[in-house]
Length: 240
Image 1: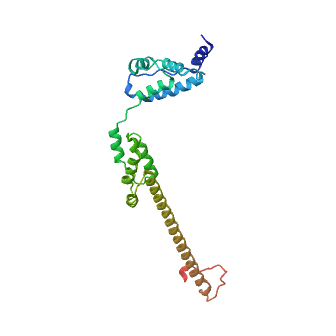
Image 2 (image 1 turned 60 degrees about the vertical axis):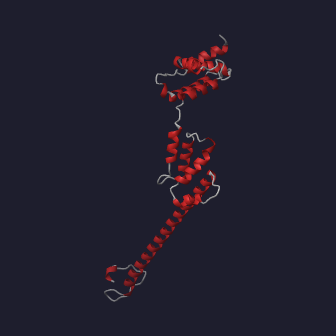
């Protein structure tokens, strides 16, 4: 056994090889495969075998992956025995990854509209993510653009989009973001103005109250004496 092989065996004992896959329920094994793949990448780094050839690392993977996955690899997938590590990983990834249903995904995409209280950016992010699974190809940006126009909640924003000639997805995004920002700015200004009016009204009421009280105090009282304005008032407002 070479020094490299001894090193691998030592590290395999020290760090533990990833546990092989259980493919009894092969339709739902993608999460298990994802965990195995991450564990294997960590293992080959810890074992110091990243310097090995890609073909040899692929062989180490197949040695770790378990008997069921080995049989799948050689009898169903039928990949070249000299395949490199990334090629083997890609083959398993494509096999285990759940297949997308374009019809259902497109149906859900076309139903998606901006929800009450949802910001435009949140809506835009959601439909971009949904479009990834719809197999739109080179029509993806056009489909997202159309979904923005149809799905935005504000009718005035929608009308503005419809008036733009040669509307692109990026133009639609810029228009909606600017409109939403302007709307929020106007809301902030309106709140500030209301607050200022309330403060002014409260201040005037307070001043009027003090003036009425002072007039009653320094003009007259029961003894017909005139008080100094700086002296404390002994009368209540009800005595005026």
